[in-house]
Length: 275
Image (cartoon, rainbow, N blue to C red; front, side, top):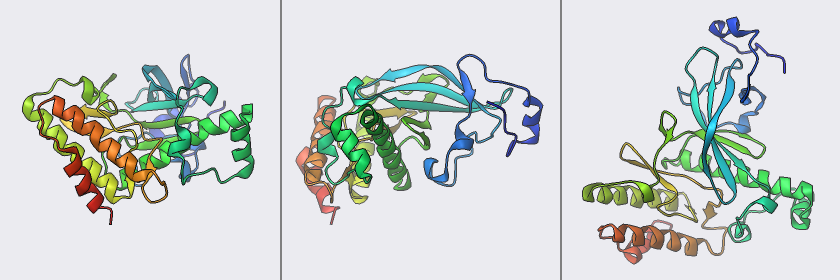
């Protein structure tokens, strides 16, 4: 692939003859459309130069429906952006079995694609994987714009979702379930999670699968990950049930860690915020 200097900074022109090496590719940012990029304004840390390479640094985690890799996007010789690349697998290689329940009220608009997915053709499987990536990208944008602490959604490229890497250096932030916290820190984390649930509810959504395993803790701040199943509380007939399950899941976990977490009282308060 020939380097396109359009948009490159003057400092990066000296790397005009550089080519990606093993485990590298040209940054996919220039090829993405505005609708495939994160909300404006883009964060200052985000590398958008056309001269940048994406360097794969290893796998962060494996999951039911996707694997997450650590990438560095940088112009050669300069500091760059640490990104998490979540790559969705096709349904025949995924363990995610409940997608139809989350999809109530959210269907594919292209009827040909919908038929292909239902028929489980090779094309349909690739459409389904891209659909989940697109759904999570849209969910992250919605959450980010609502002020919910989620990784900044950088870019969507087919079945690959690029987002802010939450961690320090090459080390990912621990999940809440794995964090070693003091009694006061558990109480503070619960206060943050209550605020997160409230922000979701006020935006008309529920996470749909919230637990201590998809909440990260970085420098005392709780952040939400894994949003492909974000539930629209108005469009999904089971939406309020998903909200209740989210509340019960997190309250049960926090109670085990000594926090006074009343699930039914919290759920009633969140429902009151819906209308």
